[in-house]
Structures are given as structure tokens and as C-alpha cells.
Length: 626
Image 1 (cartoon, rainbow, N blue to C red):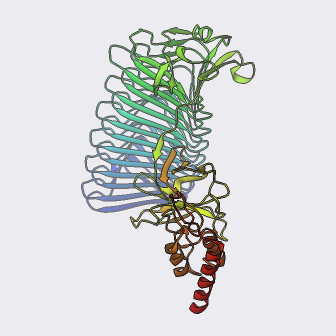
Image 2: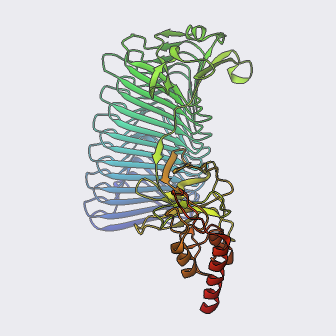
Image 3: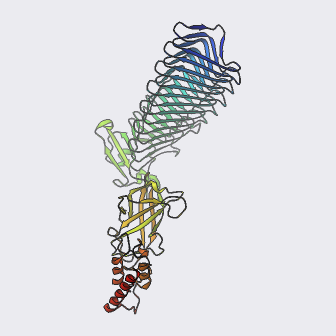
């Protein structure tokens, strides 16, 4: 149907692909109207309907179904419009439906309800400024799957009333790259056995709701990332008995704003993660609300800039079980009262560590006792106690070492007292290292001007490419560049296990090895902050002791001569640390002839004449080799 004024009015059901394959094209301002529209009607059928261009429209009195029992596709593009009372995508148990609303001015208006994945599989994509109106159910019946994507600036899905995302089946909504959802009463994971998943990702990506419930009686997740935003009047995570809800607000600019209350573990199990600069705000906050349903809740606020702002009261374990973790510079503020373990049954805690901050409204920085007066219920605020590597009551901590108090006079926290708690030790990974690879003795001469090679072996637990080279230190020395590349360290599979190892070099001038030292320790960190530590034995030897047996003798001389102009390692006779074995190395060996790292009684130290004769003999031998 093409062109302005081109019309088709159907008085019965319009089927596109009834038993076989069918296609409907409405373009250039053409118009189709009728009572019902069915795309992919019977099992095995395939139907495609395209409504393209400004003025092109398909209007039905009752419903448009994309995939009734067969396979259906609906494309509304470049300003096309579809309107109906109810819309269905993937209606029957074995059906598949795919609808796309793409481009500025492209619209699909459902005046009553929209069902995506009713009993079958349904997907809806709203892209590049397209708009869809009408809500209802996504993933309606058991075994169904419904997915909606709203992507791009200007792309909008608007509805009022109740939305069931994962009613009995599986429902997913992704809002990305500036897409917008304007909702109503939103229930994610409605009934037992259902699953609902929401992702709001990217700057200006927004979901606005009256009431936003993550895990109503089923299982549900909410992920707000990359600067996305969720705004509602009331927020819930783990609403009903048996439900499981988890929400994550991650990254700078990512926000979840609740005008009124936020409940984490209302009657079910709820988890809230605020990480890497994410921000959550509400009036009153609850962690573990009801006792009779054994509700459990965990809130973690972790990382610099990560914030949970409660303008009213904060309840940690109201009657259920609740725990609040504030770590790594995370901040929780309470403008009203802090109420901890309200029923005093010992299942409510605030754990603070690594620069975690708790700000309570009031002037109470004179002492910890004054600060605790701002907390009702119990005093179950804990800090990490290094003395026995566990959480301990903050009342046993030391001011100035374990915690600090400060009264705030500026910005949003003016009038608050801030409790800041110290650091939980970073996880430690023991690593396998080899000093002077290829040598069992690992000889080290304290007067050497060269470099000391060290290999860090990669394995299943250690990806050496993740090591922060700037944090590495061996006996106080940092690794140095080797050769003309200017690179510090090189990646190579040294031990043949198909896992890369890291080869480093440390300047002997920077090492602070004391006489008698028999072990060196290498420390550092991975990029994620995990601490590394490894050690290897060494043997301090005199210059010229190539084989590391503690003596400079003819064995060492043989090694020097065998590797003349070729070898680069100490074990080959490279005593001065350059890139070859030559006259300097020979001179060092001869100058220390018969020297020992542990002189024995009766050891004979050669006379100068003996050394002169030995030197002349070696010189003659070298000349003969040429």
C-alpha cells in the first residue's frame, strides 16, 4: 500500500502469513485500517509487515499480534505509525515475534496494553528516536521470554499503570545510549519462578517510575551503569517472601534517586551494591525490614565517590537481618536518625574499613561516645582489626590510628559529623620468582656494577601482564630498563608451560644487600590492588666466581674462556654486567684469583708473581684461539 491517499480498510482480521509466508508493505503515506492484525498467524507461518515513511499508518480497532502461533516481524520506520488497543509480540507457546520502531517520528501506540513474550518469544527494539506507548507484561507465562531494548537519544517507551517484567516467565529491559522509559508501577520478577532483568546504561539513559520493585516474588536484577539513572517515588529490592532482588549502581554519574523510601530486603532477600562512584539517594532507607518473613539484606558502598545519601532515617536491621558495608572511600550519610538492629537480636551490623565514611547529622566529633549518641538501637558498628584479622567493635578502636572524627561545615554535609575508618589489608598473592634464572646457586657479588636478573613466573593464578611495574621492588630497588628499548621488563614463556612470565633486571648499584644475606624478597601489586610477594635464595660470592661455589678458581676461568665474546650472564663469566664477556671480566677474575666468600683455614693466597704468570698464560691462550 503506497502513496498518499492509498487506503485499505479490512472489516475482518487481516492476516499476514496465515499458513504460509506473507508480507504487507505500507509506504509513502499509505494507510491500512481494520479490526485485528495478525502477523505470522498459524504454526509454521511467516509474516512480515513494514510501515515506512511519514504518513504511513496501520490502525486497528482491537489488536496487532506479531507472531500469533508462527513467526512474525513488524518494522515501523522513518516516521511510520501503528495504533491499536492491545499489542502482542510472541503470543502462542511456540511463536516468535520481533518488532522494531526506528527513527524520529516512528510510533507504536497501544492504548490499552502491550505484551512482549506472552507465551512465546518476543522482542521489541525502540531505536534512533522511535517511540512506543503502552505497558503491560513482559515474559508473561511460564517458559516465555520477552525483551525490550530502548536505545539512543529520543528513543522512548511510555506507559502508565502496572508493568510486570517477568510475570511468570523471563523479562528483560535494556535502556542504552540515552534511551528513556517513563513507567508507572513497575514490578520486576513478579511471581515465584519468574526472572526479571533491567539494565540502564549510558549517560542520559533513564527509567522514571512511580514505584520500582526489584524482585517482587520472583528473582530480579537492576544494573545502573555508565551514567544511567533510575528515578522513582518508592524503591524496593526483594519485596515479597521468597523473592531475591539485587541492584547495582556502578560508575561516576550512575544514579538511583528515590523521592521517598528505599527498602532493601523488604520481606525477601535484597542486595544493593553502590560502587566506583555510583550514587543512591532516598528519604528513609531500610536494610532488612520485616522479622516474620526472615528478610535478609546487604548493602555495600565501595570506592571513592560511591555514596548512599539518606535525607531521613536509616534503619539497619529494622526487624529482619541487615548488614551495611562501607569500604574504600565509600560514603553513607544520614540526615535523620541512624537506627541499628532495632529489635536488638544481634543480626544488624555496620562494617567499615579502608577509608569508609559514615556521616550522621549533628555535632558529635568530641569523642566516639558522642558520635554513638547519634545511633539508636545497638552500637554494632565494626572496624577491621589487624591484630586478629577480623571485624571488631568500633568502641575498642584507637582514635587517630583506627578511626577519625570530624565535624563538617561546608557543602552538602555541613552540620554532619563524619566517622572515617582505616584500611583492611589488601589480599596477598604469593608468587614464584627465580633470581639469576638458570643458576641454582644464584650468585651475587656486592661490588658488581651490573644488573641482577629476576623472573616472575606466571601461572593459573597470576597473569603477569596485570602487574603494575611501578610497584615492584627487590630489596628496595625498582626494576630498570635493559638494552636500548627503554622498556622495563619483558614477557616471555621462560619455563615452557605456555603461560607468559615476566623478566626483570635490577641495578646492583640500587640494591642494598648486606653481607650475610641469603634471601631477597620481591614485592609489588596487581592493577586491581592485590599485593604480591615472592622470594628466592642468593649466595654472596666474590667477583670472578662464575659457578657460585664460593671460590674463584680454574673452573671459573674455564667458563670465562668458553663463553668469550658470547655470554651475557654471571654464570658464564659476565662479571661487569655488560652485554659480552671480555678483557674486563677476565681482569676481575684474575684480580680475585683464589678469593673465597667463606675463606677456609690454611687457604693459600697466591703471590703477585703467580698471578702475573697466570695472566700471561691466559693471554697466550687467547692469542692462540684467534
